[in-house]
Image (cartoon, rainbow, N blue to C red):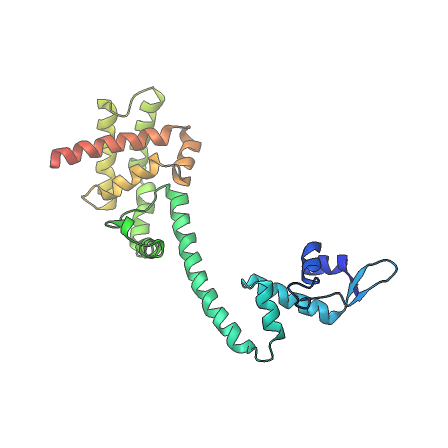
Length: 248
């Protein structure tokens, strides 16, 4: 036999939980009364069978059941354990798939600082459709693309060109200054040369990541100084806006 305190420590429940399920409610018998109550001290004690029942009750609670539902389940002579847990497994698998997508999208936003909203009329979609789209979009990034990203940030010319922009920031320049914009143009050309692309999409994403509040920009600021990544991101934004205006 174990005392109420020992059971609480063993199962990891609060005292009030045991007190609640030991109290009759709405004319129903208690879900788990103590096995024995010491008449002189009033202390509650539980035997192994009661502790086993408590573990089962807590499992049902973790699965989202109310105490009333647990009472009905445990007292029902027709309760089919195999079928019930089979249904719970399917529900949990659906929840897990949903949570996995949430984690993946959260990781993308946490790292890049960018909220993915590339869906056309994305406001017309449910959150589940949004998560599915974003999850699939980032999962579709090929190994070749990731190798290309590593290659860009490992390129000495690219990093040297970025450092030149950092130097103008340290000197007190503004993102729209001609000198800064000329340096951005050089970085843009190197970016596309290393990435073997001709468009501005990749460079635009890079700029947005620099101006965001994600881990990427945070790490940049740690190395170069607070505000440096925002400076480059803003300079890229101005440059690409001018480029788009010219092309239109």
